[in-house]
Length: 273
Image 1 (tube, one colour):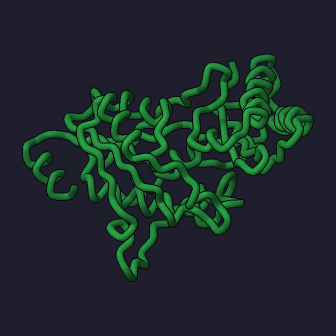
Image 2 (spheres, one colour):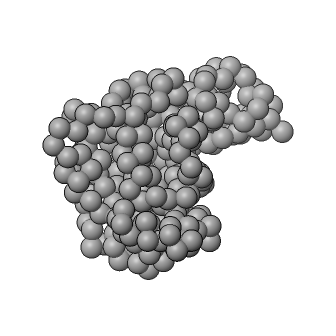
C-alpha cells in the first residue's frame, strides 16, 4: 500500500481515504460519495482494530465479510481496498500509541477508556500508510470525528478531514453495523434514540435553550422503553466536546443506550433560530 501510494503521489494525483472496520452499509458507502470528487484515487481500508475494543466488548463477533464488502466498494467506485492483517498493523512488540487528551474524557470515553487511544493510533497509521490527502468520517461518531480533527491539527498531519452527515434507515434509525445484533423486537425499541433526539430538536425549535431541561425530557422518554439502559445523554460543543448548559450556538446532543446487550450511539446538532 505504501509503495502504491508513493507511485500515485509522484504522478501528481491526490488520494482520498475512507477508514472502515468492514460490515459495510449505506452509511459507510456515503463516505465514499462525499469525497469521490475531491480526490483522484479513492482508498477504503477494512480493518477491525483490536486495540479500540475493551475487555468484554464485541471484537470477536464484529461482522466480517470481506467478499460482500469488496463487492459493495467496487460497485461504489472505490479504486483500492487496503485490507491488512493484525500483524501488519501491530507487529510483534508494538508499543507506540497516539492519545488525544480532554476531548476523549467524556461521552464514549467514560465507559470505553482505551477506545479513542486505539482509534487515533490506527487512524494515524492509516494516514501514514495510504499517504492520503483527504479522509472522510461519519457524523454518527461525532466525538470520534472531533478527536481525529484535533489529532491531525495538533500533529500537523496534512490531511483534510471531512465529516459526512448521518445516514438513517427509513424509520430514522442511524445506520450501524451493530444494528444487526438486534432482535426484531429490540430493533423497534432502538428507535427510542432517534425519538429522544427529535424531542431535543423540537424543544430547541420551540425556544427551550436550557440543556438540563432538554436532557431531562429525553431521559424521561427513554426510561419508559422496556429493555433500554441509558449510558449517557449529554449536550456538548461539537468541536471540543465541552459540556453546554445553554443552546446559544451549535450544540450536539449525544447519547449512548444499550438495547438488550447491544450498545448504540446517535447524535444531532442543533442551534437557536
